[in-house]
Image (tube, rainbow, N blue to C red; front, side, top):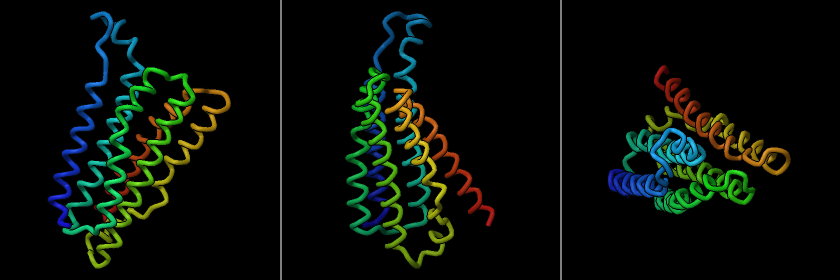
Length: 193
């Protein structure tokens, strides 16, 4: 499949999911700063989910700049990932409304982990189907640093199940910031070579 058609489809899905996500944010009970601050957990959960979606979009945008075709396996992997990220608005609001709920924390963390793993598999499928693409090989996304956010999430799960229920919530925030920072560092290293 040509990447320009697929990228247009994927961009549209990400835009729809972000729109649904923002429409799930309730209005403050009162039009005051205190009313806004009461919704701080919702805003942080939205920020985490938005950054997950934006990071996936941005990474794939950069990847599709150097790839002309993708395999059917990559398309199916992206399809499964699209299903997972389409659940983000539901679990984001569930978490935002229940920050001290272990099931809400767990499901939000699981969606984050599944999304990260599927994005990694999809990227590897694109590499496998473009073995002779020199620009793609120069990017070298096969770094173990991309798995550091999963380590932080594992720590978040341990915290949630032992001493600090919002551990996954905060681990997701730290993980997405790490995911973005690692991507930037890796891209700047590739640009410097």
